[in-house]
Length: 201
Image (cartoon, rainbow, N blue to C red; front, top):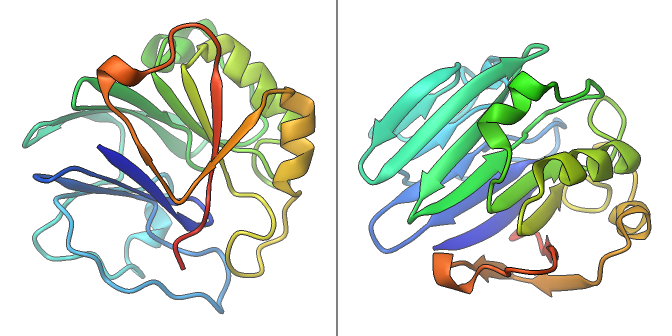
C-alpha cells in the first residue's frame, strides 16, 4: 500500500486493486482538486460532500458506523461534530483523525483507534489540533508511524502553524517522503517513525 498527500487534510491510500480517498477537499476558495477515480471516499466533515466532485462509482462514507468495501474495513465514530475513522487495509490499521479539534480522547474514544499502526492527525492548530495536543494523542494511541496534516505551507492559503513546531514538540527524527510505502511486515517495532509527506500538487 502507498499513502500520498494532496495537501490540507486530503490523503490517498492505494494498492494495485483499491483506491481510498480521505477528505478530498480544500479549506480555501482558491484551491481546487481534480476528480480522481476511487473505490472508497471518507469525509470527516459531511458538509463538504455536496460541493465535492466524487466519482459516481465511489462508495462514500460520511457518518459513523462499520463498513466493508472490497478488501477494506472502516470503523467510524463522531466526536464533537467531526468523524474519525479506523481503516483496516492490507492488514494495516490506519487511524485518521481528519478535522479533530481541541477535545481530549476519552477511554471510550481510544477503544476505536488505540494501537493503530499508522496515525494521521492535524497538527497546525487553529480550529484543529495543536502540536502539543497532537503529541498527547500520539502518546495515547501509541502508533508505529505518525503522519501530520493540516499545517501551514502545504497547499492553499489556510491559516495554520508550521510543521516545524510539531516536529520540535514531538522530538522525533523526521523522514520525508513523496509517498509512503507500507506493508505490515515492515512496520517499525521499536521506535515511532515520523513521516512528513510532500503535497502532491
